[in-house]
Length: 314
Image (tube, rainbow, N blue to C red):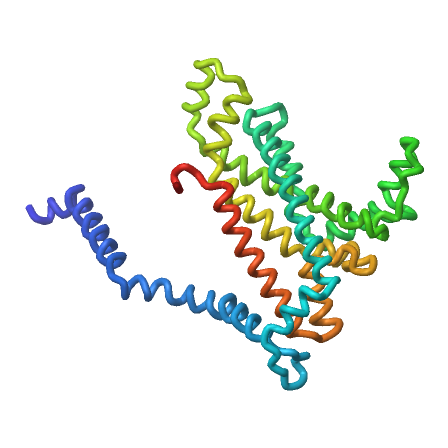
């Protein structure tokens, strides 16, 4: 009799209950949690926390790493804000952040909403817009360098073809235009990536909200303003953090397309940090730039949390 009961569904449910109970007991045991978390924390500490701490420590020294360093305290930080090249790089980074936010957030939202409403060829456009974001940044930079080339570039050839030859430029050698040329490339490469993030958030909204809105006679704009936008605000907060921190850390496109030139005109903090560390061997100074960059990324997270604060958070 006991064998028949254990062979039936009752015994199976009982075993599942016992497994569930044992799992709850494990999750309620702080030592068990520590055992599971410890390996991941060790890896994170070795490859993230220790390098950050060492970078902060090295920023207090004047060193080229090939001779004993001299402790200088906050001198590197004071020198940074007296360095016109660094302040120009910081200004360029802020322009990159503002330009990326203006380019990525509204455009990505517009394209995501259009695809969400199932326009004709939505799957095709979704793939085409996302495709540039999976291409290597160096390859993108090289391709657009050829497009912007003043002698044989596609852009100048196109301007000449449509009768606007007077607008032809040596685009990446013009210190007033080079940075904006790079921002356009950044927009082209990543707007599809942010579109996919926002589209995923829109597809998680319960369709019953839209059905009720249509019954009430709400227009497409009213549905977006009252349903779509409020419901995707938590994802927009994450997206804004990705845009801002990504804009602060851009290196590959700038390095490949202009190398920070002409005459540091397109330098951002990451390229200037590389220049100070590996061209001039001022590692302490470069570490100070890295610390400033990290602090700006942290501040951007706090600012995004405040701007996109939802009603649930308040």
